[in-house]
Image 1 (cartoon, rainbow, N blue to C red):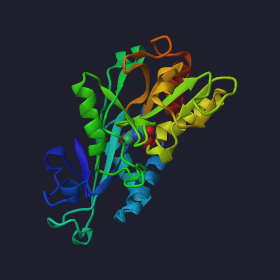
Image 2: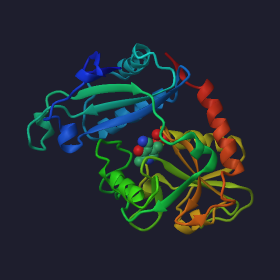
Image 3: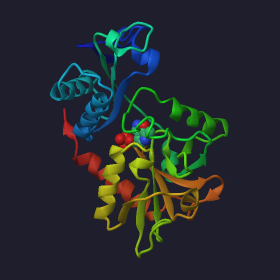
Image 4: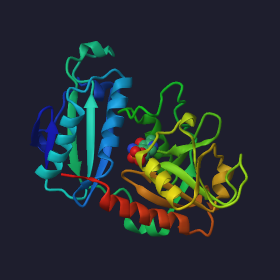
Length: 298
Ligand code: PMP
């Protein structure tokens, strides 16, 4: 496999960064995960824009233009002859000294890895996932805004470890005030006839926590909200409690790597009928369709 590293494609065995890189020493850097489906890169522009926004907020100047970076993503897929792939873009603060001071880092490191990914086995998408709520709370957004997709994922990793230790694959993280935020690398949605804790109304609602409670504005999340509106679901960002999850008709997770994962049990409570629900299945189907048609060719 060839990896793009600071201006050239090198063999993966040669794709190494310094132990003085602040991305490694302090998690000082930003990243994106992008997918390609059958030769089409999904939501490429959105991912590149989010990477540049994350970098801008941490005052990290990406040493190339968006167009150049898009070209590198396309080249990574061509060089490795990949059609269905997962692409990881990383920009670190670069090599510095042992202090925090980013001014000591003269040049950011940029690398792009294109590889295959299967986050969960296929069976799970048909049968659904069991989740638990963990004690590790999601970072308080006032302290570390989750819109910065930084290399410092320890908050999420601690939650993941808790889930794994308890015998589960994925964790629900709550906010400081006890509201549902997201999972360790996915956004969460509920389908409910009632419309959540704060609203009434008729018809099926698709609800997901608002970004201000401390969740990443996922690109898959946005896609699913658009697809759901087209399917006449009432889509809304709303504060959700565990009670709302337990009593939802359907629950699912979204993410670039995970795509749309049905959830059938949370903290021992069966969700709906205990199997992936009709709205989730319709959205999975619509999502599959959009990934086949809406990407950027390379
Ligand atoms: N939340 C977190 C914490 C994530 O890391 C991710 C993806 N890496 C998501 C949600 C899903 O975002 P997207 O759909 O843009 O991949």
